[in-house]
Length: 447
Image: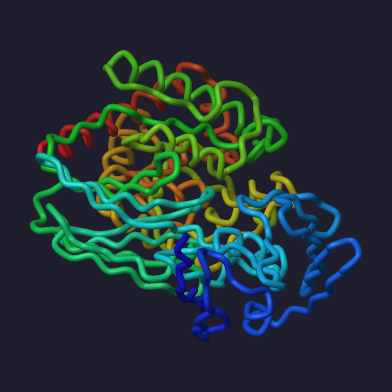
C-alpha cells in the first residue's frame, strides 16, 4: 500500500495554512495550531474532547460523535495512527463549523472559513436564440434587477458568494462582473446588443438571468387590486360608506369587462378580506403579470374634514412632489398599521433599490396613468385632478407598469352619493377599462 503525502490548505481568519496530509487524514495537533481549540484525551475511555465555541466528543473508529447535546455522524471516522489522532479531510468542514460557530466549506481542495455561503456558483448556458445565466443559490434570497439596452444590473440581497467564482461570458452576454458589497452582491451584465428581451426570475435553487431574441410583446395578464379590506376599512364617507366595499365592487366590475375583452385577470381579493400590502405585490409578481391596477377612494385628512375636494387622480410610483401627493401617499401606506406588528422591518437600502428597480417601468407606468386618467374623466364626468406621483408601498415591489387609481372623494358628500350607485361604479370600471385598452394599443405598437 502506498501512503500519499500531501498538504491540506486551510484559509482561516485571512491567513493561509498548509497542514501535512496522509492518505486524506490530518493530525489533530496540527489542526489545533491553526484553529486554536483545546483538546483532552481520555486514555481509559478512548474519548477525545475538542473545545472552542462548542465541545465535541469523538472516538477512534467510530463515525458517531457528540456536539453539545446532539449526536452526529461523520462520513469517515477519526483514526488513531501511530499514536496520533487523525481526522479525515472530508469531515473537517462539518466538525470545524460546529466547533467554532463559523461556516467552513471546501472548494477546489481548499477548506475556507467564512460567513454562510449562499451563492454557490454561476453557470452560463448558450442555446439557439437564448443565453441563460444560472446563479445557484441556497435559501430564499431576494433580488431586483434594472437595466436598459445593453447594460443590466442584478442585485441579490444578503448574498455571500463562494470565494473564487469564475464568470466566463458566453452567447448574448458579452461581459459579466460580480461585486461583493456589505449587504448584497451586484452582478453587472453587458449584452451584445439592445434588441434583446431580458428576464430575471427565481427557479427552485437558482436565480436565472435570461437574454433571448426579442419577441412581440403583448399584455395578457392584469392584476386588479381592490384597496383595503377586512379589518382595514380604508376611508369612510360622511354617511358611513366604507372605501373597502366600493373598491371591491369596482374591481369586480372592471375584471368582468376586461375578461370579456380577452385579458387574463387576477384579483388580489374577491371578498372582504384583509390582504397585507406586500402580499398584494407578491401575487402580481408570482403571476408574472403585465399590468398592476390598484383601486382606491380619495379623502381629505380628518383634521381638514371641512375641506371639500373632488375629482379623479391616478398615481404612478415616484417621489411625491407636493404636500397633497405626500398626504395621499401617507394615507394609502397607513394600511401597514393593520399588518402584524412583529413583521421584520425592511432596511432603508432595500427601499432605495426597489425604487430603482421600478425605474425600468417608470415611463410605461406614467403613460398608463395618463390613459386611465383621461378615459375615466371622459366616462364619468368627474373633475380631472391630473396624473400624480407618490411612493406607494403597494406599487413599490411590482416589476411591471403599475398605477394607483383614486376613483373619487368618498369624503365629499356628492361624490360619496355617486360612489354608492352601482350604475356609477360600472361607469368607473368602464372608464378604467378604456384607459387600459388605449394604453395596450399604444404599448403593443412600440413592440
